[in-house]
Length: 110
Length: 115
View 1 (tube, each protein chain N blue to C red):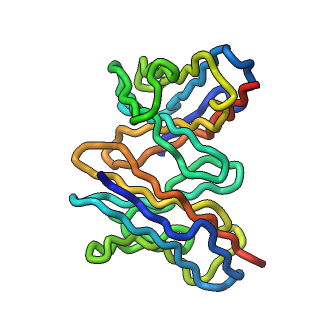
View 2 (cartoon, chains in turn green, blue):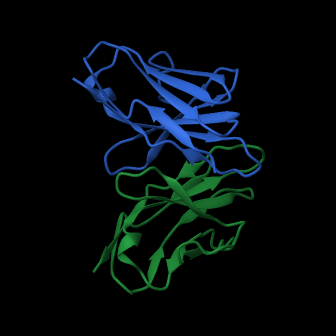
View 3 (cartoon, rainbow over the protein chains, first blue to last red):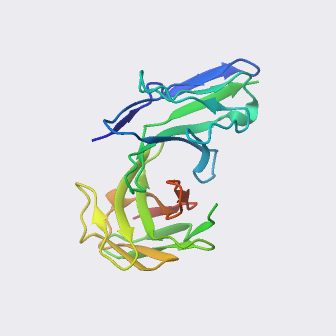
């Protein structure tokens, strides 16, 4: 069975400081990894996925298969980045199911 | 991406009654829909997976006779909480999937309060 671990429940950083939200996973196959974000009183929405290798809102995430990690990074945090961030894993092989981590609440201090 | 709506957005019901929550995919043919439960300040807990035209697959510990799921079409799934109790009070979220990517598109959620 797959598992996604986000070790930090809460992460507080000052505006302009770098941000790194940690995500580790365990799965024996070749998964697809996602970061979802949930702003206050809004629905969960996709932030980025590892296969697209793109930067969204200044965030990037690189899949490290050796360390089984998919950390989310941004060089300069903005106040509007304050939200809940969830790392999620899809096992592939035709399944649409996602396994979510417990989430990290990012609070950017002005 | 897909636009997903849920109705109602908030419902209060009395203990012992049943309540139905609708999940609609407005512009996307959702072959698969998911129902989640989210407790305050916690992550999403998958309740069940439903494929259009077939019975839902429930996660361990989720009572299928209590949480009835119907996925009658590619754009509509319903979750009926039967004989609701206060402990069923929660935020229920649906999502849809079915495209060439493995992305899920989420609804805004329905807050159920059982008194």
